[in-house]
Image (cartoon, rainbow, N blue to C red):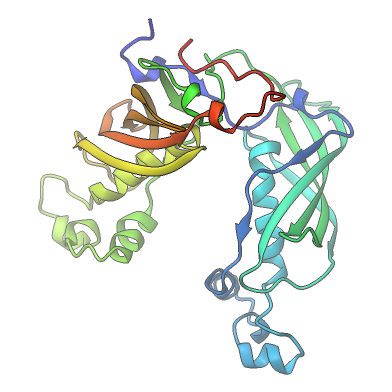
Length: 328
């Protein structure tokens, strides 16, 4: 029986350990990322990369391009980012990169994919808890055309048995059993991006979220995060572990905010499976999501129902047997 204290629930692991990186092993990174013109403009202006071909279509056309050119460092950063979950999310310093080659320009609207191969892996001579791994990473378009390649090296933590770990779900209905409880590995710290930027982006005009003056003489003494964003973060932190095979969101219920969230608070999430109701080739899975701050206080509760695919509906007879569901 899993404890009612979310802090003791098993963690769904993210990232890999040094022992997972065997020479010659290839990782096909499962996400892709479409690059939009807005990504290119914001990245280029915020990094002071004032080359007009990155944000001025007429200048790009005069230079012989069919559209604005995506900043090559944004291409590098996106392809790098797509690789992180499989290679270095679990922790370890980025030591450097070499041999970065841009094989052709990328234009807004193209989607980038990535794969990486282990080319070197050795234990650290000074730190017994980590190893040093180098990968050859390749970025491609949806048609398979290579646009960038590079080698990068990281410290990577070795396996730890300190924490209780849950199985990693694929997100099919069969992966969830009623009563299962687990925590999500990622956390996020609340910053002015939330208190000012995201609050105003959704046109919430309550000044208690973005005006120090408004909140100075209140019991809070400072701005607090918009509850809708606390809810969104709680669900966002849980999403990859719960809706990897989602068909559609059905709805939310029983939303409660128990403790205010302020700038500097770090939010994590935990989930309990409440119901799994078959719907033909799909199933409606109901989760209770909990947002938890760095002090272990529950800041947000919400019940969420999502329609997800069943593994049985997508498998052929030759497919491997299904994974053990969470909670068994």
